[in-house]
Image (cartoon, rainbow, N blue to C red; front, top):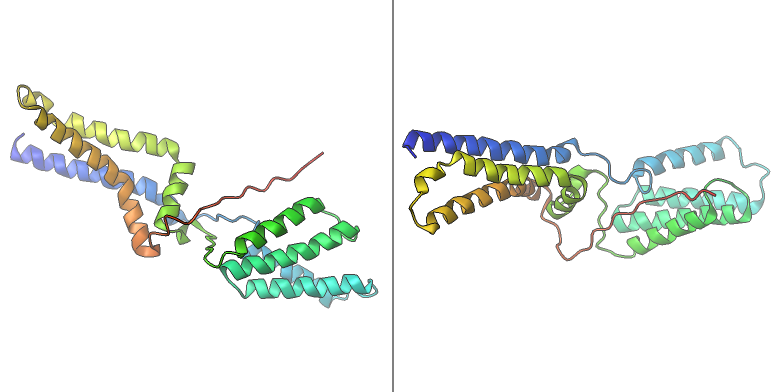
Amino acid sequence: MTPLRKQVHNIVLGILVIFCSLVLYKPFLDSPHLTGSYISKEFYEEVYERENDALSFGNYKGAPIQIQKNVNERLNSLRNALASNDNEYLVFLSQYEAQVYKLQKSGSIVGAEPILTQAKSKTLFLLGDDPHVQIYNTLGESSSIFYLLYILKNFPVSIIILLPATFIIFILMYDTKKQEGKKLSSYLKIYLCAFLSSMFVLVLPLIAIALQNGIGDIFYPIVTFKFYRHTS
């Protein structure tokens, strides 16, 4: 390979690696919401405003004492939750959902099935019981390890295509015909460089995220909950 061709080869390979890395990095830049309405602060802020307005407008005047007490307890739990973060936030949300469950069980309000509200309350409590728990409301807040798992879970096709494509293009760009008759080590060197180039596609976005949000704890479990509404 001539010096000029080698230089062009390296430039093209560098552009390829950067382009593929940006494809995997784009979701982080877009920063979509992860929590939905299940535990998002935006959702519970709306709930708090709605229930507080109902109380202010006198919607609960004349209601049984237990209902009025429950309303004040719910608002207090939401107020504390919205002023907290991570594990404390989850514990206060658990209290709120437990109070909603009491009303549903008594038949005072209708909506989601009581068993689902009770399950959510217990789930939030168990999560909040861990003082080290972290909540990522958006993908842009995530650590490097979390983002890697997110990519593997949500973009498997991109991983399957981009990494081998980088590997194959590297091999095709390299003049392997001139390696004929040379030692096996020459071929191994080419394939090793191709493999490392394809790995850089995945590693570069993770390094960028680690510099911004940290690597994360590899021993801490990452859990994703999906909420299903039961219909009969």
